Image 1 (cartoon, rainbow, N blue to C red):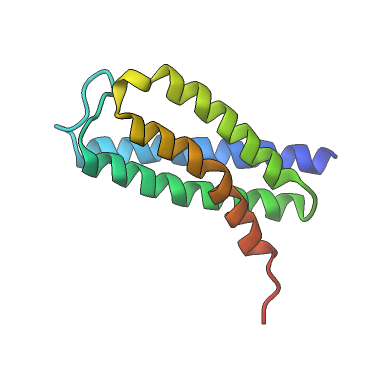
Image 2 (cartoon, rainbow, N blue to C red):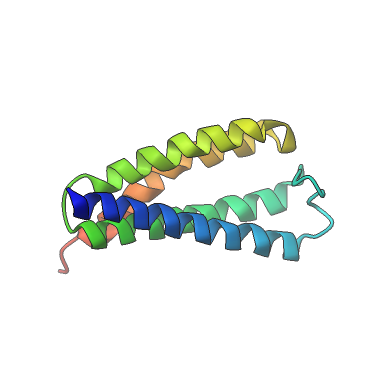
Length: 124
């Protein structure tokens, strides 16, 4: 049980650190597209953010599975990321279009579980 909890914590921290880097990178690449308050209504920077978030979710799920080895830790991480995502995106709803927030929330759990599945597969 302790290993599973540790795996979820590690996955969440890794996802959070990668997301901070993601947002820093997107702000550097598209400085004129993102307002001082973090608002963005331009499609390209939002799509870049979603693409990187997809990859960071896969990475977090994979790392969670590697730490936990077995069990439902990746599912717990997927649920945690989704619940936190709903809260954060809900509080920032006015800063970006609805399609971005919905896409962000919807992809968190599946991509996290895909990452876990990738490292679980046996080599051929």
